[in-house]
Image (cartoon, rainbow, N blue to C red; front, top):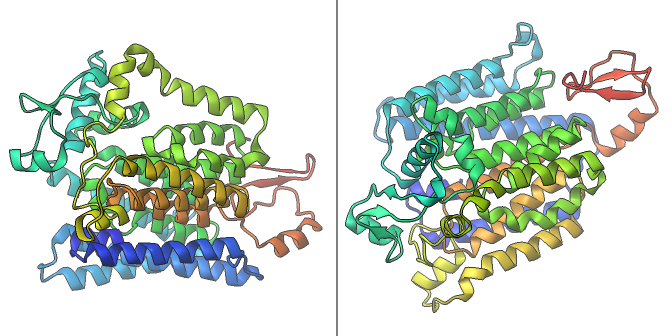
Length: 460
């Protein structure tokens, strides 16, 4: 929210950074103190539903405002109506559903269609869209996207702001594809549909549908709507930023762990780790998932991570490194960055230097190790630690924009989604009771007393 307000409404960077720091301290304190564990199941479910419905309502309002413009006379009425629909769909009783079709599911699908129409009617002039579109085109033509140049969509004045000296050659971006290979592959569906930005919309919708599942609980339905209508999501999708891929992979991996699909979770987790360069800082957090570290998931993690990266490295190591190492930025101090370091350099007179290039990685690794040591293990703890680690990293980086903070916020949201369906005490009491054969659990698994284990519908 703070990052979105900084970009859209122009609040000061100093206020934005202060808000980020206070919010981060509050999150860390609650997680470290264990105060998120509520004693009774009804209170937990109601708190999740209320929080998720609030996020969905605020997100719908901000996304609607972005779509129609702040000066539209229909803004207030249209946003109020949209917020009311989302809130009612997220919090409403299961009795309003028709089979597997819940009001929340209709909201998710309706949001998908409306966002699709918006993106179709609003092209964007941004280098992210250019490199995705031209990179996929080169890939499908049989060429190496990491050894190509791209069209420069900016004016000379804008180019001086975004690119380091020497990057533009004959007004073309002389570096190769600047993202990891999985980003390139994920953009293929959108490219084939006519707009690479559609891949992000598809990924977010898939995650929302996975969170919704069969919509058995109010918490599931409200969380699914919140994922699909997150604050600032339309702004993110319209610019083609690729953090939607990382969010979808992280969320699906944590859901797979929760549903005891460890092998599939290992595949998704590997894809998540290699989806952005800066995610190297979350590697120490993998220790929090050690309870799932059996041979199958570990082998799947290593094989998939290597398969998604090594072919392009082997094809042209120098071109690959030059493209993904961030050479296009060249240490530029971007005034649109929401960062403590940028605030210090531009407003407080700090001297720029090479230290700031390595500070984000160093601090991120330290925070990751501390989070892995202090927070509760498991999918929820891993998602929360990922959010804390990335937040610490981007707060001291020269490149820290809204899309990075979207990943931070969604990591915290995924931590809530990945939380156990029951509180620890309730789960302990429930362990002494054997459900009837075929009884569905809240996460969609089915109890089979013959084997004394819960099997997900997919595993069956």
